[in-house]
Amino acid sequence: MSEYEAIQAQIAELQRKAASIRAAERAAALTKIKSLMVTFDIRVPELSGTVSSSVAAPRTKKTSQGQKVPPKYRDAAGNVWSGRGLKPRWLRDALANGAKAESFLIR
Image 1: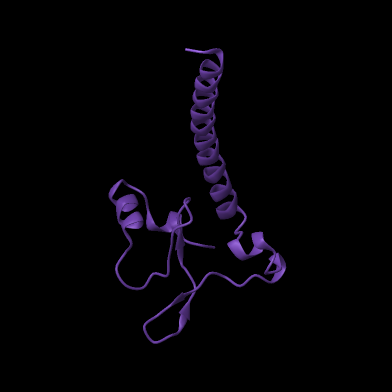
Image 2: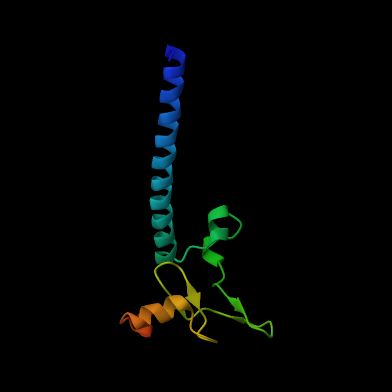
């Protein structure tokens, strides 16, 4: 193997390592961002600057009649449920594991 080929192999290995590290750090960053968004009730439009944070409307969900219903329950991952219709899987799983529905109420 020539010196050039050896360096190219090292570059390829470093690029693989860099991609792996980037993916892990990106996943950690997304988890932290999602947690902060839930904690401070931040919405995506606020991040892009299209909506003022002081006048952001609450998240809503359309019903079959077109009426918007604000969410009543939220978990740490940002999943929301209006309290109408079937319970979503994230809430059913949490309740099955001993959580109380009151702990997910949006105040």
